[in-house]
Image (cartoon, rainbow, N blue to C red; front, top):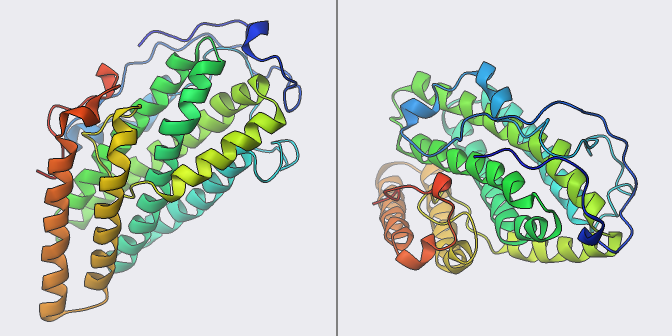
Length: 304
C-alpha cells in the first residue's frame, strides 16, 4: 500500500464551513509499513506490539489534531457522526478492559458484546462513512484502506476465537490480547487521523446528516465476523440483510447455550453451528465480494 498523499485538502473538497479549525500537531513523515491482510490465527498473533506503530495511520497525510479530548459541541453535536463514533469508542474501551480480566462464560459473554459493537460499528463505517471520506478527501482511499485492513484482521481473529478449543485458555488469551491491541490501534487511527480530516472537510449539518444515516445502517448491521464479504460497497451492502438475520439468530442461541446445560445446551450449540455454516455459504456468493480491495480479500470464507 502506498502512503497517502501529503499536503492540505484542496479548496474544492468542501465549500462549507468546517466544524472548527484545528492546529497541526504532527509533522512526521508518511509511514510505509507493510500491508496487513488475512491469514491463519497463528500468523495473526505473531505481530508484535513493537510493529504496531509501523501499521498506524498516525504520521500519514495532513497533520491534524486528535478528536480524543473534544467536547460534543466540538464534534458537531450529539447527532454528528463524529460524536456517535466517539461514543462507541468509549463503550468499546470499557469492554476491552473487562474482557482481559474475565474468564470462561463471563469472557464469552463480553466477547459477544464486543462483536455486536465492533462489527455493527465497522459495517456502518464501511458502507456510509468511508465512502463519504473517499469522496471528500483527495487521499481518502488510501486513508480508509488501512482501517479496512485492520478490520479484516479483526474478522480473522474473531473467527479464530470462535474456533478455538475451549480447553486451551492460554491460546485464547493470546488471541484476545492481540485483538485488544488491534482494536485500540484502530480507535487511535480513527480519532487521531481519519475523523479529524472528515471534520475539516464537512460542515456541522453534513456531519449530522451523515450521523443519522450511519446510525440507521448500524442498527441493521451484521453482528459477527464475515471475512469473506467485501469491506466496500456494493458487496457489503448486499450482504447486510441475510447475514444480519443469521447473526441475530446465532446471538440468541449462544446466549441460551451459556445459560443452560444438558440437552437444551447441546441443542442450542448445534443450531448455532448450523447457522454458522449457512453464513459461510452466504459469504461465498460471488456478488458479495464486489468492490473489495485485493489487500483485504480472503481466498476462503470462514464458516464453511
